[in-house]
Length: 81
Figure 1 (tube, rainbow, N blue to C red):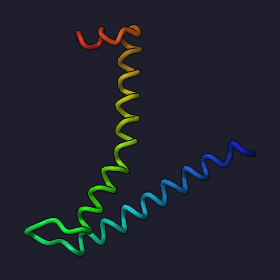
Figure 2 (cartoon, rainbow, N blue to C red):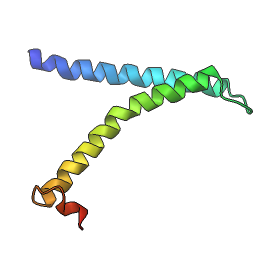
Figure 3 (cartoon, helix red, strand yellow):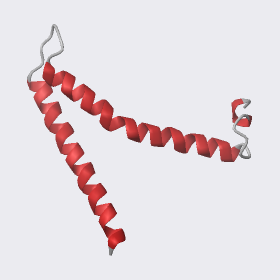
């Protein structure tokens, strides 16, 4: 039963992250100023970058391991292609 808690928690955290990001987006769009960034826009930008960073790192790591496997586990071999 303990194994089933991890997907539930992860799902809840992803949903909460989406809701926060959506609310920050709506607030940022409502408070747009043409001549400068305001605090709402800056909060959205920082939170969005922070939310995107772990997924980008996972994608790059997965891509590097795939390329290493294709090159016969020699990381320098895929650079020479």
